[in-house]
Length: 313
Ligand SMILES: [Zn+2]
View 1 (cartoon, rainbow, N blue to C red):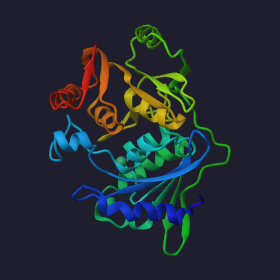
View 2: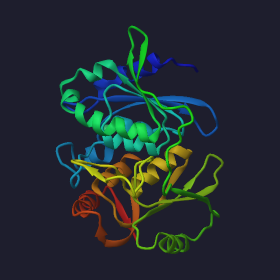
View 3: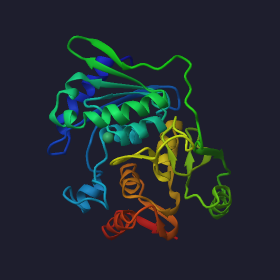
């Protein structure tokens, strides 16, 4: 299987009108090598995860987040392994997707030239320039504009060969015994992270081995807490712990065991929506009174009340 960048972009263009979103129809293709080394390519649109579409509907926000998963993030959540993968997008990516793309270890972004002409892309052009591209530069992600018909690719952002971004507080991944006692792992992680919030999961690799993954909130790869700000208007440079776990699992080609996902506090609205998008429907929460903001607990209640998410104790 050997697809050109034009074929891979065409795969996204071919499905973009399948997007259930009434106004912003976006699609992406991800292409890389799976855990067994076999090449893959898959395409996804933006849209509502099935349980949210069916049980809550498309007109209701989940906490302060839309109920949709963006096309780029949907690709990452469904890909067999995202480390060093390439992603082809019909539109310029939003800063939140770039954070996920960076954490998932994707190294190349291709954007269809038509995506820059759409009204909403023009309106959002400033966040693409000011945040998304800046984050790509720091994280070491090359960005290209692509013309399918003319079979032409031009770089928007090139990265110095040999650039390696500063890696502060990477997510942890540690092999663990299959019979690892979950509460023991959680107690140890509480000691390790001290007062920081964190998330922890047990995942399985391609060979069926168990790996414990855990993470605290952190700025996007390439940013360090000493020198960098955390926010720019509506967008934050930080990734929340559950989101980092989802992206870490994707990067390493791991499958999170739905029965073993733990968050020390109530996840944010966006973490919860992405979790559902990843097909996870159970979580244990250390302190249900603790949350980053007031929207997480509201989102949690909506999802639990709708029978989409179970809280385990
Ligand atoms: Zn996005």
